[in-house]
Image 1 (cartoon, rainbow, N blue to C red):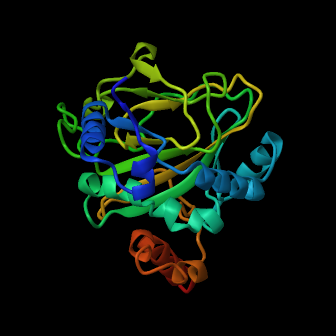
Image 2: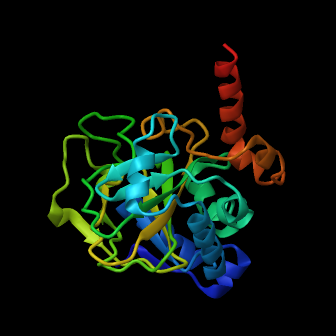
Length: 282
């Protein structure tokens, strides 16, 4: 499968892909609307992310359901049967430059999204055993939904999935409709369009925001957490998936403590706090 591009340990340590690797990855992203960078993240970084997730996780599926039913603004959303999305507090490893501004990932994303790309959201989606398959969906509707769709237009946002455990077919990886980022709004996916591959710790699965996909059923016995880092062009913000809640759950103190190199990537954290102060002061 040519959308799976292995990253060497040398590339990961250097924080940059070699030219042949980068070329293969860009070709996959353009052609298929996705690319799986196998081994892009250090397993130790992912282990720290998983520990932080477990520390912040509300608990079992019943507790999640009760929390998700609370009125907005809510950091928890139900996104399917036994499936929940959590806007974790961005602290510890989830505030680390090695995660939010990972050198290898950001160097790859800048040519695709521009030098001034921003983080639009950081969440974790958890599927519990018994979670059913999600419906086919794009992360956001097409910006231009004429008969030609967005034929050959570059991406405006890319969702980067970081599995916090190994995800096999039973645990339920993400299925993707290859090439669907160039489909018109009228074309709908079918089960025959779906491609599913297992995820490994260290993988980063980059998904064009226009690409149809679905979380597969969790028929196993393990709870499956996947972190999602959404990077976008500076002019785009997802107003569809983040109504009545913040997709970047970081305190202003933690934002101010970030390095000057990382702060611009997370400038929307500051903007959200300023907007909230304005609205609360009205």
